Length: 298
Image 1 (cartoon, rainbow, N blue to C red):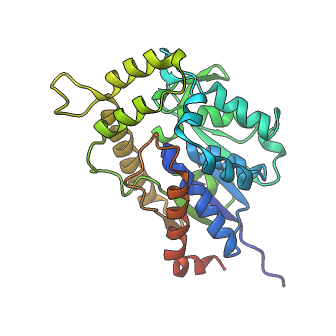
Image 2: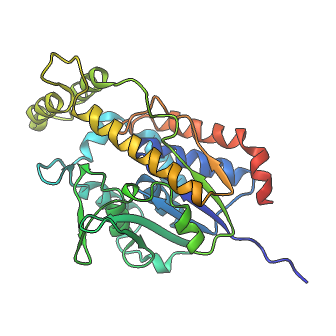
């Protein structure tokens, strides 16, 4: 009797720019013969997972490695609505580079993206419908990206309820799950507001939004006490990281993965999207450290 092949699921967690580590983790796992049958993502994990499910992850890894601050700024469509960034430019780029119209149910492997209903706090698992609508909803980090209105609901980042979607992988039929937690080494690190403010002001993309950048950097990083305490961005960064870390620990206590990968990304901030090389290298190094644990998958 032929032994049934076990289905492997990747649960890719949220963490904004730290999520580029997912590319390194996927590359290293593939190098050791481990490929997913199911891939589920929350927030940046949903985005990277979508590039894998469409077989475009190698191309997108090269693209993120080429990103500089000016490139990142050109993709940020600023607004004063429910968040700082609309996200339409990023989604437009993904549609142009992959395909304008991809349905989740038509993908070669099982895929799901996690978002959160703002009105109820319920999890939403996108398992069918437009792939990029699902990704856009999943990355809607409160305060940063505006929420998305889909299916008569306002949706926000899935990390509000399920930062590392092990449960989604299991529900989709995964027998063995590799989970990636991007935030475990980040809680408690020093505030970075002065450095981030300087970086933001030094990376103005053009004169048309120069004034916006100056005003935004003051609001994000300055406080009312001569910079003695955390700025708004520091508070947002720390609050999101603490929330994700605590929810992840709680959910995994009751539903642990077979292998848990926690790359050390403590000095990479939520908006350090130009540091892909470092994040990818740390993702690969994390896999190498966990090779003995990965033996259970063979």
